[in-house]
Structure formats: C-alpha cells, structure tokens
Amino acid sequence: MSVQAPSAVVLIRPHRFRPNPETAVDNAFQSLDPGRSDEEIALAAYNEVTAAAAALESAGVGVHLFEDPDGSRPDSVFPNNWFSTHPDGRVATYPMFTPNRRAERRWDVIEFLEREYVVGEVVDYSGLERDGIFLEGTGAMVLDHVNRIAYVARSHRADPVAFERFCADFEYEPMLFDAVDEHGVPIYHTNVMMAVATDFALVGLDLITPAERREEVASRLADSGREVVVLSAGQVHEFAGNAIELRGSRGRILAMSRRAEASLTTAQREIIERSCRILAVDVETIELAGGSVRCMIAGIHLDRRPRSLRRMDEDSPRGW
Image (cartoon, rainbow, N blue to C red):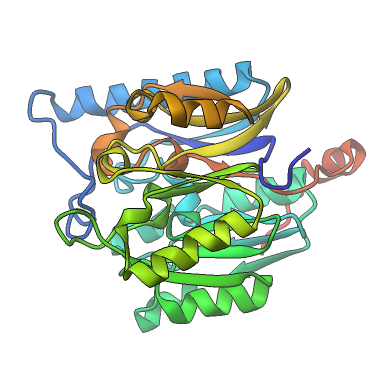
C-alpha cells in the first residue's frame, strides 16, 4: 500500500461543460475549438468522463461519480480544486479565485464522504474568498503525503497566506516557488507542471525561477527518495505533469491523458513503468479548459467506514 496513491476517487460528470471564459485571464493552457458547437463540446466532455471512469474502474480503482447538470459551473469537472482529503481523516475545502467557480463546492459530496469514509473534521478555508485570498486545493498544491511536503508555484490561485495556514493546520513543510512558462507567464496551477508519485516525481524544473530555488526543489524531491523525471516546457504544455498515481487492484497506476503520454520519452516512460503502469485516457475536449486528468480526479485518502455504520447513516446524512 502507498499513502501517496489513493485507491478511490471522486469524479464529476458535467452535462454542460465548456471552457470557462472567466478563468482564461490567467490560464495559458486554455484553448478554443471553433469547429464544434457548444452542444457538441458538452456531449464530448460528458463521454470523456464516462470513459475515464470506466477505465479507472477496470483498473480496480474505486470511482464515485457525481453528476452535474448545472450550466452555471463550466469547470465543475475539476473537483480537486475545491476539496481535498487526508490520511488523518480530515477534509479541506478551499477558496476559489474565479467567482463562477465558487458554486462548484457541493455539500452533497462532503456528506457522501462523511457517510462512506471516516471523516473526523472538515476544515473550511472558503471564507478567505471575502478577503481576496485564494488556494485552489490540489491544483494549487502538489502534496507529498509520505514526507509531509507541500509544493506550490505562486500565482493568483495560491496565496502564500492561505498556503502557510494550510501547512500549519495539516503539518506539511511548505515549498513555495515561482514558475513561469517559456513566455514568462506564471504557471496558474502547480499540478500542471508537477506530479509526485511513490517512487518518482514528474516536474518541469526549468520553469522554476531563480536557478537556486530550482535546485532546492530538485534536491528536496531527490532527498525524499524519488527519482526526478524532468519535463520540458513543451511536455508541460502537453499536460505530462498533470498526472496522478492511484492504487488499483493489480498495483499502482499513473493516470494521465493520451496527449500527455504521447509526449513522454522512452527514458521517462521506463522510469515510470519501473514503479507503476501508465493508464492513458482521451480527454482532449476537457483539456480545452486548461486542465487534464489530474485536475479531474479528487483522490480519497480516507479510511472506509465499517459497512454497518454506513447503513445506519443512509437515511440521515450528517451535515456540516
């Protein structure tokens, strides 16, 4: 077993997906597809989530699939931005930078987790939105659950104040750095350039500035016992860093998009496959919104509740 690789996930299947115009202001990974209508894009995204859920289940990963028919939440397919779960039994909810993303927080999802898993506390940071302070979950943070290190690229969506508070509350060592693409544009979410697995880490090292901080991040990853797989800026834009390690019924897998997998070199693939199997899924429509497979997956790092207790709670879900 691996603390780093959860065996169950939450996915949101959107019925009316579209790239979010409000997030395009700071998300250089977003793009448009003028060749398809809004209806065609929404249907394609729905089908991509359906296929991704089926692929994960076939690999032995537990999938909790929630529907979202609401057209006012264009980015609801990315639940890892608004909540995270932790091995100590806590769940955190986060302050979102873009106003139209704040409605993505769904208490039915939290109540489901409380019924099915051992949840000791829900730590709600969403009130920081009133002060213009934002921290978009495990999009903004890449967490090393084993060594208790949180890696964050500074951005509008990762305020140092909120980050320091999270690290103090959850006992993570903060590793804050600046990262920009080849055009000097700040990386909007750390998880598009970095993924930490059990035995290796994918990271766009050359995007981190200055060079001294880049070396510190590389050393911290290496000191944690992981082999560092350096991604180029081009690979980062192909979403090679937007991957997540999960635990299936036949061992660990690395979930990523087909686009991301195609960008890997033979040497990079060999390092990954020494530790886990690559599971690539087609999410080209969802990638129009500037996120990929990692953004779609909220890992569940919680213990299952005994079945008898889950049955008792079926008719009386706990709120918070």
